[in-house]
Amino acid sequence: MNELEYTYAVARIRALETALLTDSVIDQLVNCQTYEQCIQLLEEKGWGTPDGKGDAEMMLKQQEEKAWEVIRDVAPDLSVFDVLSYQKLYHNLKAAVKAVCTDVRGGNIFYEDAAIPGDEMLKIVENKEFSRLPEHMRHVAQEAYETLLQTRDGQLCDVIIDRAALDAIYAAGQQAKDDIIRDYAESTVAIADIKIAVRCAKTGKSLDFMKRAMSPCASVNINELMKAALGGTDAVKEYLSGTMYAEGAAALEVSASAFERWCDNRMMQTMKPQKYQSFSVGPLVAYLFARQNEIKTVRIILTGKQNGFSDEMLRERVREMYV
Image (cartoon, rainbow, N blue to C red; front, side):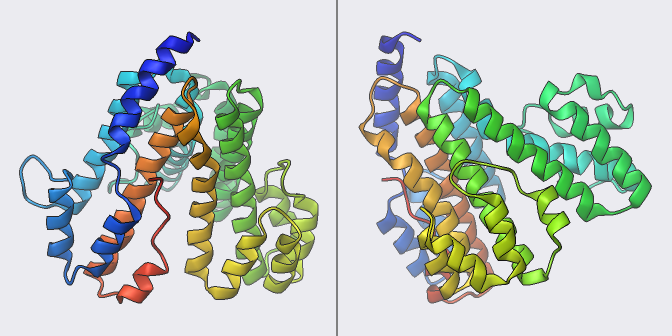
């Protein structure tokens, strides 16, 4: 890819980064007395909806669409970004398989901005046209469909598809030319494995369950992690303390929400070095991730304000910003 093309794209992204929400703006949002004040502050930051009705869900959806619009507009090669939308793609597969097998329809269960939107995914599953799916999804789509029909075990269906999504992300990372995609894939899979271990330790899941759920990666030894999970949360903390994810063990000591926050912040730390790159796709990937991270954080704050969470509870949940 021409370095000049990326120089122009990165220059555009650098200009847009100035509009990203900072940690201090997030702090202002947390300090707002009411949900309405939060919406007002966000509108002042350019997050308003065209109809001016202050609909939070519409606002967040539009911000997500805007973020992808920017990438589509500036990126010299969009295929690099495929891996960042795999989780949405696999979510749509999961939702379609469940809708078809249980014959329960309705509700906003799909991501419409995924590579295969809801209606199309439903038709593929209904007609068992799995060959229409990307190659990395075909086998798992059929397996999940047949498993759910035979067993009626929704959790098993989830595990099969979630594991396939992690495997696909990791494989894409291994094949990527750009370090940022490799780093993204490594962090995504490792953090997912750690989350699975924590959940399994708390719920007493079997080794067989963990083997189905966890995806191998370089920075975590999943055999050791599984063994630790069988010994409970303290054993998971002990294993993590000897890895590059030791801060996760410290977060687990605090609370479940502090641990979730650490998981997202760890991904943000993977992205931050891209601030100093100028001739690669890295800053574009980091910008998109930063936008998704701030949207997630704003959603947490707005939901908290609607449900009467204290400022202290919200601070424990807000994510670290990119700028």
